[in-house]
Length: 97
Image: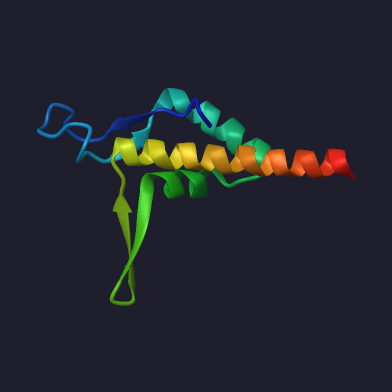
C-alpha cells in the first residue's frame, strides 16, 4: 500500500497546485494497488474509489467529492495502518492460542 503514489489531474501548473487539484493513482502504482488488493481480498475498483473520493450526505443525497493528493495520501496511510494493526492483533491472538 505504501508504494501507491498519486498525481494531480488537470493543469499541474495552475494556482494552488497540490492543494485543490483532484488526485489520481499514477500508472506506475497500479501494479502495487492490484497486488495489495489481491493479498487483502479487496475489490480494486472499490479501494480506488474509497481512496480518491469522499462521500458526503447532504439533504438525503450522497455526493462523491474528489480528494486532492494530500487527502488521498492520508487515506492510503490510514488504510495501511488499519491493515497492519489488524494483522498484528490477529498474530498476537494466534500466538497466544
